[in-house]
Image (tube, rainbow, N blue to C red; front, side, top):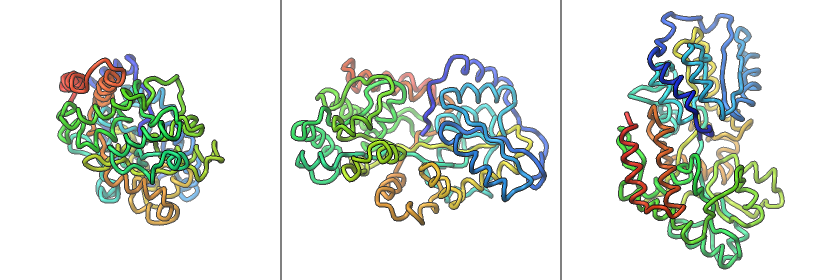
Length: 414
């Protein structure tokens, strides 16, 4: 999942300027992989803080290579990337969030992936799709992200529930039972408004058979399936089963711990947060697949690793990316960060193969969907955010809100 903040007008202005003078690559063969050199890397968020340790291990086995990792906060990542690309100063290797890649590939800032070195079949299909744009692949999947259902098992017993809800209809009944019989304040936490509300909506949308865009980039956000999904989503707010607004910096795990919220959809890193912050909660919660509508389908997020088109160190950069994305490298990265491996073979050993909770994530990734890459993907998803908020706040019907989003998205897709 891309955890980036919204981008500003300055970044968009720089992007427009860069498009007019887009990079065309270094034009030469560059430095050989076995030559002494420094490979520069930008990585975002928590990954940026952790990657330096892996780089040191890599340097021990590759004494001619120095890997210089620069951590970049997600809140400033887009602006820094656009400014660097416009100046022809992107690092050799750059982490691309799932909403970024199309924009920078369209600019000509990224080198196409060497598909003789990196095999599409090694990775989850949705992860590979996130690195592909306009018939070419520009990013190698680094880690994946999806959403599953977290639920309080102890409160489920009080509510008279047996196991996790299997269907979307079961989910609504469970939310009602938690509130009525277990005394919870809410039945389910789902985001009602704000940036990236669409990520909270994706499990409902995809499971209903809907989508924002087709694989060939056509807007379909007002399809009958999407309308039905948003009606279902909005119903939690109409019935008082989910809170309409949350304070800035809201942390759902706190309400999960107190029992105010008995269910929510969350990413894999939350398992560690619960274990570390609320040890007394151990044994009182579990994870389960997204309840099925037409199917059980969640969102696919994560990040890819791309090489700058202007890099003089493409060969060495490719070798470093290969090191990070092999099954062994991905298993090591999981141990360090708990980021889910994009390389399927990494799931065949250790905790990734034996832990029953992790098997839930593996299974969910098999069917997870990602929105097709587009240069204006952040703008496209923001239109869906607005539509969702209009419904959850009681300002519009699902059909009217999605019809408006459809008309606006039609003008943004390539």
